[in-house]
Image (tube, rainbow, N blue to C red):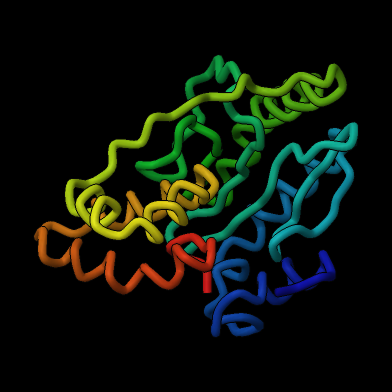
Length: 206
């Protein structure tokens, strides 16, 4: 992944084989990403790199991060649960996202058209950071698939390890298992995941 902010806009994030090629998504959306960068900087945000992407900070907190994909480019907000979204423009990153947290663009010109709104959203988020406000912690009760419950009941070592995982790691397994339509597929996945769970890792961790 990149460490120099300028590399993102010139070459990409460095997370895939399309890095530094004309096919990189950052090249496709170069004008729009440059406009988003300009707005973030004009709002007084500190520019840095996190996870290979331009991240904008204020008052010691992450405020927003840029991303580019084949079909769109995005400005995503941290602590999205605080955002009021008066224009109803925020979208969820995916079906498992708890809150709408991103402004999504499918045309470079949309950034200029929404400039006033983008700046107002950035300033709202900056205000929360200045006041030290954070979203209230949400307790999510995970509904474990039947096959996972059976595996935990039959394997005390697995059960102890699974319940010792962080909520996010537990959720990663539940999401993965829910993606399997057949019970036998879920059972096979649990068997493959056993070593990872024992090691304290999430489903997507190596």
